[in-house]
View 1 (tube, rainbow, N blue to C red):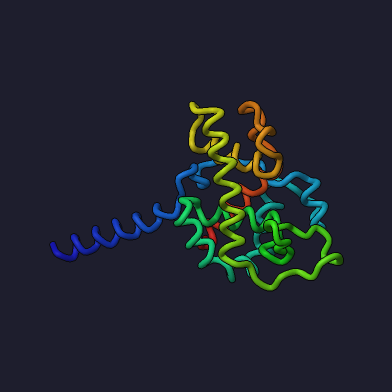
View 2: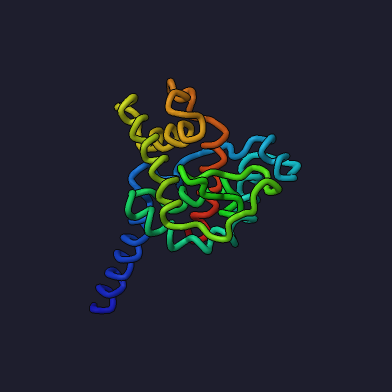
Length: 194
């Protein structure tokens, strides 16, 4: 009988730790997404697009992202954001931290690696800045559309993250390329320990 209670206790603990990193802004595991546009795939040398392209790009970025996983866990817990979403944003914006620089007034993504030397590390402060921008956008969407679901808030926040706060005018705007790609990458990264 005590072995049964021990087993049930362990299952409850594993379920608690599993759910504790889901975040307050939707469950990425249940979100459907078409993934990256074909333009994103082509820009990165892929001859395909969609979820497959997003997953491949996240896979390429994963060795860089793993270095920052403890930071993403800490920041995710502080802001109640799934660390996999933070990792998805970093993957999309900076190839996992390879091309992210601090320009003094905030974090900037270097699009052309010939212009700036990539940083070899990302600080907790930089990950916090990125996450704070996302949270700000999500909260703006929550204020403007109070009847939406947490999943819609996350999608809206991601679309507003890249397109600005005025980008999302209705639920028709929740399918932006940035959001679709980040969610597909985040889902992949979630399955691989983020």
